[in-house]
Length: 374
Image 1 (tube, rainbow, N blue to C red):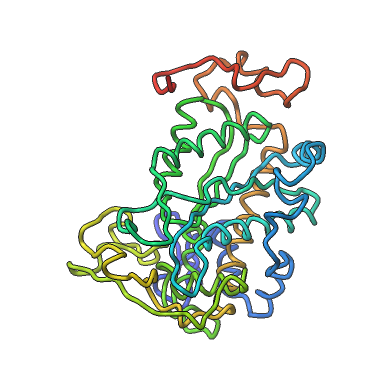
Image 2: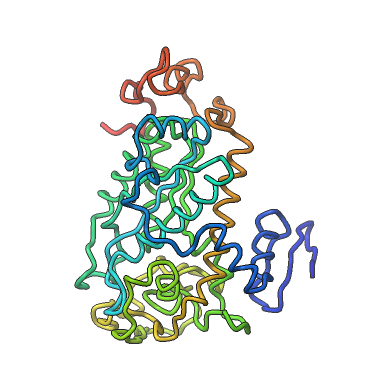
């Protein structure tokens, strides 16, 4: 059913909290939401999900591919996906690299699919195997906390290096509670260097949050996404089952000191006034309340419950890549003069393909503006 309000059209579902905007993105999500289990399996097969992790497989990542081949790929598609995770305690039953492998294996699925279509997207190895964390993770064994400035500066210089190598469309795909740090890195990169390009940070689970709301369907999750819970464990069981051992599983719940309804859970499914990251002190830190490393009920996990959310993010991320590629094929960018305060003529040598005639490296780029790092 479609409803129109104030000139906007929305696609409704049988769940009062799940509504999709009537545009290409919303229609895609609605199609996945309504798909049969057989159709979901067909989508996952197109992306070859599940598959073993490809981080160490030749030809999958920029860093595992001969340079000459990378150049050929970039000339066809200069979009790069950068999966970002962390090292974090996810309970006795799961691996501490879970966030990294979720993000990387989703990106790998998109790479396989786009390769079959003749427009293979590029992948960069995860730059943050040890990520930043919210305060309430302090002191948890198995959780390695990196200072925020290290996280942001690492991402800024990863973006700069990729841009210098001709990858001027950069999509950072995140799977951890450090989103504000990645947004800071993206904004600071743009202010510091004022280089034209297309840049995005995406919390993949938030991008398809509708699929983490429990519905009355056999393959639905019974709880919404929190931490090392039913959602994350189901995804791990689907994507990398050999890294999970359910004989060690324990459920646990956090402890709050104030009435609920103000702060949302990890993927903001309930549209509450606050994101989870917008406060501390109203609930106990993890080490005190949930030393199990779990917030939720991983005991409810089944790989089948993760199929629809994973199908949704694969299709959505593919749509993002295809829309960018169609509008701006390799080597093309939106209007340069509308993206930067730099002189477009000054930028011309920097925008050329690396090592082509007249090309200049960004490390020769003149500093500009008040945000230039000394």
